[in-house]
Length: 305
Image (cartoon, rainbow, N blue to C red; front, side, top):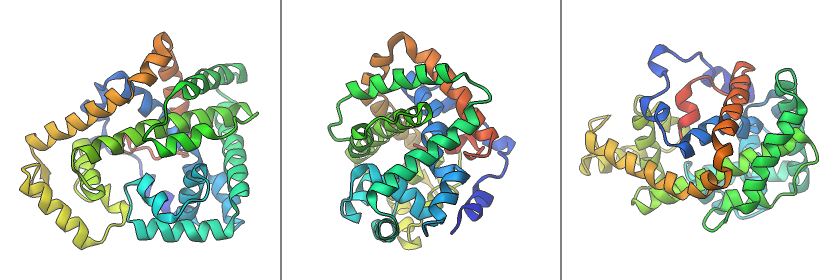
């Protein structure tokens, strides 16, 4: 599937029913920072410039997503990549990863991802923010990244181990990505500790955010029988009734959220008094990415993690 096909499917204007969920609007500081960062951190996934340049090297949308995100890990086995990503079928991710790596060597993948993303992000932010302001926020985030412990966080550790870009916008993206992956790794850890597999994780999150069952989890491409088994297990635990999440299911998902937030307290502490102004600034820049059609407009998509 190419970039334009994916964009056509996922960039429909958000409906009234897709307003920001109250559970997100009323979230704790760690979640608010994560949602403020998300469109900047995922710029490499949604920028048309990145996909244009990757397509020149034979990579389609999913190959660009998988290799562009996994290249921070080096060149591990595809099963390791799938384990770190958590949300997708391992065989699918492994196959996409192997093909992308065959088309574009690792060093070039890193260079192209960072360079193209920086150039694209510059085009979005330069009209609305002074470069000195961007540099200030990028430096604050990078200082936090350098302080954090990577134990149990493979994608964060890989992103944090990269050399900082000399480009202001590249550094902003790298720091945002690292902090995004820091929370993402923690979130997977919280789910695993709760006894949930990847399909159940997807279903609980989409129902918690107000998606109809399958609208979000279906994009993760699990076989129908695997999804059916996962749903049956959630129903047996009293977390779903039919295709709807129960009060018990909401409570369990709220506990997963609280556990994730607790693991993100070092980020909150490191930013200290800068947390709110930095979050507000990032939220403005993220809205600019959405307005430029470089991140899906549905607010639930931003919060799905």
